[in-house]
Length: 232
Ligand SMILES: *[C@@H]1O[C@H](CO)[C@@H](O)[C@H](O)[C@H]1NC(C)=O
Ligand SMILES: *[C@@H]1O[C@H](CO)[C@@H](O)[C@H](O)[C@H]1NC(C)=O
Ligand SMILES: *[C@@H]1O[C@H](CO)[C@@H](O)[C@H](O)[C@H]1NC(C)=O
Ligand SMILES: *[C@@H]1O[C@H](CO)[C@@H](O)[C@H](O)[C@H]1NC(C)=O
Ligand SMILES: [Cu+2]
Image (cartoon, rainbow, N blue to C red; front, side, top):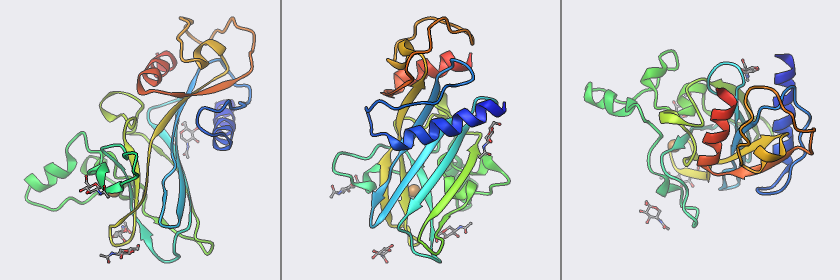
Protein backbone atom coordinates (compact mmCIF):
# COMPACT_ATOMS: atom_id res chain seq x y z
CA UNK A 1 0.00 0.00 0.00
CA UNK A 2 2.68 2.45 1.00
CA UNK A 3 4.66 1.37 -2.04
CA UNK A 4 1.69 2.18 -4.27
CA UNK A 5 1.41 5.65 -2.87
CA UNK A 6 5.10 6.23 -3.35
CA UNK A 7 5.02 4.98 -6.93
CA UNK A 8 2.01 7.12 -7.75
CA UNK A 9 3.81 10.15 -6.43
CA UNK A 10 6.86 9.30 -8.53
CA UNK A 11 4.72 8.65 -11.58
CA UNK A 12 3.03 12.01 -11.13
CA UNK A 13 6.38 13.73 -10.80
CA UNK A 14 7.61 11.98 -13.93
CA UNK A 15 4.62 13.06 -15.97
CA UNK A 16 4.96 16.72 -15.08
CA UNK A 17 8.42 16.84 -16.54
CA UNK A 18 7.44 15.48 -19.92
CA UNK A 19 5.78 16.91 -22.98
CA UNK A 20 3.04 15.06 -24.82
CA UNK A 21 4.41 12.15 -26.80
CA UNK A 22 7.84 12.39 -25.26
CA UNK A 23 9.28 9.37 -23.52
CA UNK A 24 9.14 9.71 -19.78
CA UNK A 25 11.27 8.03 -17.17
CA UNK A 26 9.29 6.24 -14.53
CA UNK A 27 10.42 4.90 -11.22
CA UNK A 28 10.19 1.12 -10.85
CA UNK A 29 6.82 0.12 -9.52
CA UNK A 30 5.77 -2.41 -6.92
CA UNK A 31 4.06 -4.46 -9.61
CA UNK A 32 3.69 -4.44 -13.36
CA UNK A 33 0.23 -2.94 -13.58
CA UNK A 34 -0.22 0.02 -15.86
CA UNK A 35 -1.11 3.33 -14.35
CA UNK A 36 -3.51 5.54 -16.22
CA UNK A 37 -3.28 9.26 -15.75
CA UNK A 38 -4.84 12.22 -17.51
CA UNK A 39 -3.65 15.78 -17.55
CA UNK A 40 -5.18 19.12 -18.49
CA UNK A 41 -3.08 22.28 -18.68
CA UNK A 42 -5.44 25.25 -18.80
CA UNK A 43 -3.70 28.52 -19.69
CA UNK A 44 -4.96 31.97 -20.49
CA UNK A 45 -5.55 35.41 -18.95
CA UNK A 46 -2.21 35.19 -17.16
CA UNK A 47 -3.16 31.88 -15.54
CA UNK A 48 -1.09 28.72 -15.92
CA UNK A 49 -2.52 25.55 -14.44
CA UNK A 50 -2.01 21.83 -14.42
CA UNK A 51 -4.71 19.43 -13.30
CA UNK A 52 -3.68 15.79 -13.03
CA UNK A 53 -6.06 12.88 -12.67
CA UNK A 54 -4.39 9.74 -11.39
CA UNK A 55 -5.91 6.32 -11.12
CA UNK A 56 -6.31 5.30 -7.50
CA UNK A 57 -5.07 1.75 -7.19
CA UNK A 58 -7.30 0.76 -4.31
CA UNK A 59 -10.88 1.87 -4.19
CA UNK A 60 -12.68 3.82 -6.84
CA UNK A 61 -12.14 7.23 -8.32
CA UNK A 62 -9.24 9.42 -9.30
CA UNK A 63 -6.79 11.44 -7.28
CA UNK A 64 -6.87 15.03 -8.52
CA UNK A 65 -3.74 17.17 -8.19
CA UNK A 66 -4.27 20.85 -8.97
CA UNK A 67 -1.48 23.40 -9.39
CA UNK A 68 -2.16 26.95 -10.52
CA UNK A 69 -0.18 30.16 -10.93
CA UNK A 70 -1.25 33.67 -11.89
CA UNK A 71 -4.31 34.11 -9.68
CA UNK A 72 -5.21 37.28 -7.78
CA UNK A 73 -5.08 36.99 -4.00
CA UNK A 74 -8.45 37.31 -2.31
CA UNK A 75 -10.45 36.22 -5.37
CA UNK A 76 -12.31 32.93 -5.74
CA UNK A 77 -11.97 31.02 -8.98
CA UNK A 78 -14.51 28.29 -9.75
CA UNK A 79 -13.30 25.45 -12.01
CA UNK A 80 -15.05 22.51 -13.58
CA UNK A 81 -14.85 19.64 -16.00
CA UNK A 82 -16.84 20.76 -19.01
CA UNK A 83 -18.75 18.60 -21.46
CA UNK A 84 -17.07 19.38 -24.73
CA UNK A 85 -13.42 19.54 -25.72
CA UNK A 86 -11.67 22.83 -26.39
CA UNK A 87 -11.53 23.48 -30.16
CA UNK A 88 -8.26 24.20 -31.92
CA UNK A 89 -8.79 27.96 -31.64
CA UNK A 90 -8.82 27.67 -27.82
CA UNK A 91 -12.34 29.08 -27.44
CA UNK A 92 -13.35 28.19 -23.84
CA UNK A 93 -16.97 29.14 -24.52
CA UNK A 94 -17.23 26.25 -26.97
CA UNK A 95 -16.74 23.71 -24.17
CA UNK A 96 -20.44 23.91 -23.30
CA UNK A 97 -21.72 23.31 -19.80
CA UNK A 98 -20.46 21.25 -16.90
CA UNK A 99 -20.06 17.50 -17.21
CA UNK A 100 -23.28 16.22 -15.61
CA UNK A 101 -24.14 12.69 -16.79
CA UNK A 102 -26.57 12.14 -13.90
CA UNK A 103 -28.45 15.35 -14.64
CA UNK A 104 -28.00 16.98 -11.22
CA UNK A 105 -28.57 20.48 -12.61
CA UNK A 106 -31.71 19.45 -14.50
CA UNK A 107 -33.03 17.68 -11.40
CA UNK A 108 -32.59 20.84 -9.31
CA UNK A 109 -34.40 22.90 -11.93
CA UNK A 110 -37.20 20.33 -12.24
CA UNK A 111 -37.66 20.45 -8.46
CA UNK A 112 -38.26 24.17 -8.82
CA UNK A 113 -34.94 25.23 -7.33
CA UNK A 114 -31.66 26.66 -8.49
CA UNK A 115 -28.73 24.28 -8.90
CA UNK A 116 -26.54 24.32 -5.81
CA UNK A 117 -23.85 21.77 -5.06
CA UNK A 118 -23.86 20.55 -1.47
CA UNK A 119 -20.54 18.70 -1.01
CA UNK A 120 -22.11 16.74 1.86
CA UNK A 121 -24.58 15.36 -0.68
CA UNK A 122 -22.57 14.63 -3.84
CA UNK A 123 -25.74 13.54 -5.67
CA UNK A 124 -26.75 17.22 -5.65
CA UNK A 125 -23.57 18.10 -7.56
CA UNK A 126 -22.73 17.89 -11.22
CA UNK A 127 -20.00 15.29 -11.76
CA UNK A 128 -17.70 17.96 -13.18
CA UNK A 129 -18.36 20.60 -10.51
CA UNK A 130 -14.93 20.30 -8.91
CA UNK A 131 -15.17 23.74 -7.27
CA UNK A 132 -18.59 22.93 -5.81
CA UNK A 133 -17.44 19.57 -4.48
CA UNK A 134 -13.90 20.42 -3.38
CA UNK A 135 -13.80 24.22 -3.13
CA UNK A 136 -12.87 27.15 -5.35
CA UNK A 137 -9.31 27.94 -6.29
CA UNK A 138 -7.95 30.73 -4.12
CA UNK A 139 -4.55 32.39 -4.37
CA UNK A 140 -1.79 32.57 -1.81
CA UNK A 141 0.49 35.64 -1.57
CA UNK A 142 2.29 34.48 -4.72
CA UNK A 143 -0.90 34.04 -6.71
CA UNK A 144 -0.58 30.27 -6.51
CA UNK A 145 -3.02 27.54 -5.56
CA UNK A 146 -2.32 23.88 -4.87
CA UNK A 147 -4.79 21.15 -3.94
CA UNK A 148 -4.89 17.37 -3.90
CA UNK A 149 -7.96 15.27 -3.29
CA UNK A 150 -9.59 11.99 -4.20
CA UNK A 151 -12.65 12.38 -6.38
CA UNK A 152 -14.33 9.04 -5.82
CA UNK A 153 -16.97 9.68 -8.49
CA UNK A 154 -14.58 10.33 -11.39
CA UNK A 155 -13.45 7.56 -13.73
CA UNK A 156 -11.49 6.76 -16.90
CA UNK A 157 -14.36 4.80 -18.38
CA UNK A 158 -18.10 4.25 -18.20
CA UNK A 159 -20.72 6.91 -17.68
CA UNK A 160 -18.54 8.95 -15.32
CA UNK A 161 -15.52 9.11 -17.61
CA UNK A 162 -13.58 12.36 -17.75
CA UNK A 163 -11.89 11.48 -21.05
CA UNK A 164 -12.79 13.53 -24.11
CA UNK A 165 -13.82 16.40 -21.84
CA UNK A 166 -12.05 19.58 -20.70
CA UNK A 167 -11.16 21.66 -17.65
CA UNK A 168 -12.26 25.31 -17.48
CA UNK A 169 -11.14 27.90 -14.91
CA UNK A 170 -13.53 30.79 -14.36
CA UNK A 171 -12.98 34.24 -12.94
CA UNK A 172 -14.96 35.39 -9.89
CA UNK A 173 -17.59 36.85 -12.24
CA UNK A 174 -17.98 33.57 -14.12
CA UNK A 175 -15.91 34.57 -17.17
CA UNK A 176 -14.00 31.67 -18.69
CA UNK A 177 -10.34 32.59 -18.19
CA UNK A 178 -8.46 29.42 -19.09
CA UNK A 179 -9.28 25.99 -20.47
CA UNK A 180 -7.65 22.83 -21.80
CA UNK A 181 -8.51 19.33 -22.91
CA UNK A 182 -8.00 16.37 -20.63
CA UNK A 183 -5.31 14.23 -22.29
CA UNK A 184 -4.92 10.61 -21.22
CA UNK A 185 -1.66 8.73 -20.77
CA UNK A 186 -0.82 5.13 -20.04
CA UNK A 187 2.23 4.79 -17.86
CA UNK A 188 3.76 1.39 -17.85
CA UNK A 189 6.91 -0.47 -16.98
CA UNK A 190 5.89 -3.07 -19.56
CA UNK A 191 7.13 -2.31 -23.08
CA UNK A 192 4.19 -4.02 -24.80
CA UNK A 193 1.47 -2.24 -22.94
CA UNK A 194 3.45 0.99 -22.99
CA UNK A 195 3.01 0.85 -26.74
CA UNK A 196 -0.72 0.61 -26.17
CA UNK A 197 -0.90 -3.08 -27.03
CA UNK A 198 -2.44 -5.41 -24.55
CA UNK A 199 -0.12 -8.41 -24.54
CA UNK A 200 -2.67 -10.58 -22.80
CA UNK A 201 -0.77 -10.91 -19.58
CA UNK A 202 -3.09 -10.99 -16.64
CA UNK A 203 -2.85 -10.35 -12.97
CA UNK A 204 0.22 -9.01 -11.31
CA UNK A 205 2.75 -11.38 -12.82
CA UNK A 206 5.08 -9.97 -15.39
CA UNK A 207 7.35 -12.31 -17.28
CA UNK A 208 9.04 -9.50 -19.14
CA UNK A 209 12.42 -8.39 -18.04
CA UNK A 210 12.09 -4.94 -16.54
CA UNK A 211 12.41 -2.88 -19.69
CA UNK A 212 12.90 0.85 -19.62
CA UNK A 213 9.67 2.34 -18.35
CA UNK A 214 7.78 4.38 -20.90
CA UNK A 215 4.74 6.55 -21.17
CA UNK A 216 2.60 7.13 -24.22
CA UNK A 217 -0.14 9.58 -24.99
CA UNK A 218 -3.24 7.45 -25.10
CA UNK A 219 -6.53 7.67 -26.88
CA UNK A 220 -9.72 7.05 -24.92
CA UNK A 221 -9.95 3.56 -26.39
CA UNK A 222 -6.42 2.66 -25.36
CA UNK A 223 -7.04 3.99 -21.88
CA UNK A 224 -10.15 1.89 -21.54
CA UNK A 225 -8.12 -1.17 -22.50
CA UNK A 226 -5.44 -0.32 -19.99
CA UNK A 227 -7.95 0.52 -17.29
CA UNK A 228 -9.72 -2.77 -17.84
CA UNK A 229 -6.42 -4.64 -17.73
CA UNK A 230 -5.52 -2.90 -14.51
CA UNK A 231 -8.77 -3.06 -12.63
CA UNK A 232 -9.93 -6.58 -13.44
C1 LIG B 1 -16.70 30.52 -29.23
O1 LIG B 1 -17.68 29.51 -29.04
C2 LIG B 1 -18.99 30.03 -28.86
C3 LIG B 1 -19.89 28.85 -28.51
O2 LIG B 1 -19.73 27.81 -29.43
C4 LIG B 1 -19.40 30.77 -30.11
O3 LIG B 1 -20.71 31.32 -29.94
C5 LIG B 1 -18.41 31.89 -30.38
O4 LIG B 1 -18.74 32.52 -31.60
C6 LIG B 1 -17.01 31.33 -30.48
N1 LIG B 1 -16.06 32.43 -30.58
C7 LIG B 1 -15.04 32.39 -31.44
C8 LIG B 1 -14.13 33.58 -31.41
O5 LIG B 1 -14.85 31.46 -32.20
C1 LIG C 1 -6.39 8.79 -2.46
O1 LIG C 1 -6.65 7.45 -2.15
C2 LIG C 1 -5.50 6.60 -2.22
C3 LIG C 1 -5.96 5.18 -2.01
O2 LIG C 1 -6.76 5.05 -0.90
C4 LIG C 1 -4.50 7.08 -1.18
O3 LIG C 1 -3.35 6.29 -1.30
C5 LIG C 1 -4.16 8.53 -1.44
O4 LIG C 1 -3.30 9.02 -0.44
C6 LIG C 1 -5.40 9.40 -1.49
N1 LIG C 1 -5.02 10.73 -1.92
C7 LIG C 1 -5.44 11.84 -1.30
C8 LIG C 1 -4.96 13.12 -1.88
O5 LIG C 1 -6.17 11.82 -0.32
C1 LIG D 1 -15.00 39.54 -15.50
O1 LIG D 1 -13.71 39.45 -14.93
C2 LIG D 1 -12.66 39.49 -15.88
C3 LIG D 1 -11.37 39.30 -15.12
O2 LIG D 1 -11.44 38.18 -14.29
C4 LIG D 1 -12.69 40.79 -16.65
O3 LIG D 1 -11.70 40.79 -17.63
C5 LIG D 1 -14.06 40.96 -17.31
O4 LIG D 1 -14.13 42.23 -17.89
C6 LIG D 1 -15.17 40.81 -16.30
N1 LIG D 1 -16.46 40.79 -17.00
C7 LIG D 1 -17.51 41.47 -16.58
C8 LIG D 1 -18.75 41.33 -17.39
O5 LIG D 1 -17.48 42.15 -15.56
C1 LIG E 1 -16.81 30.12 -5.31
O1 LIG E 1 -16.58 31.28 -6.05
C2 LIG E 1 -17.74 31.82 -6.65
C3 LIG E 1 -17.30 33.00 -7.51
O2 LIG E 1 -16.55 33.90 -6.78
C4 LIG E 1 -18.75 32.21 -5.58
O3 LIG E 1 -19.95 32.65 -6.18
C5 LIG E 1 -19.05 31.00 -4.72
O4 LIG E 1 -19.89 31.37 -3.63
C6 LIG E 1 -17.77 30.42 -4.16
N1 LIG E 1 -18.07 29.20 -3.44
C7 LIG E 1 -17.61 28.98 -2.20
C8 LIG E 1 -18.03 27.70 -1.59
O5 LIG E 1 -16.90 29.79 -1.63
CU1 LIG F 1 -17.13 25.82 -15.66
